Length: 165
Image (cartoon, rainbow, N blue to C red; front, top):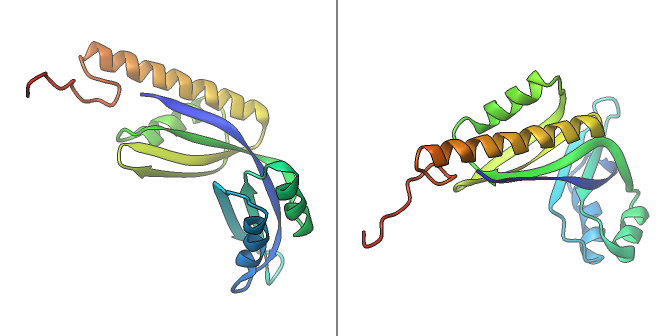
């Protein structure tokens, strides 16, 4: 199994919690040429009528200016990591279980599967936790690949196709 995990530099800010509130912010970013891969919103329970938006990536001077103009700032908390790779039944459990054994507390997790691949975002409280989580992910990937080779399968768990069949 192959996995990738890398840090996502996120920009965030308050937004009106009303129809069109998010669209208004995203319109400015789209006009600047931003090609967002990550958009996360949440309602602020302690501020009626307000929410928070997190977006990434923001690249280049024009996109950064647009982000600042609409009240977004680059945030360091939480630490957001993009994770992707080959999917396997039970993978989310195995991964989060190994992170728990290592004492890593997750700030948040969103994982989705499309076909035989998964992609998601995991948020951590500290850079150290994110780095340890990446190491554990790599170890799980290596262990799965070794097991697949020992069983005569590819990393995706399937036996190689035979020529002429």
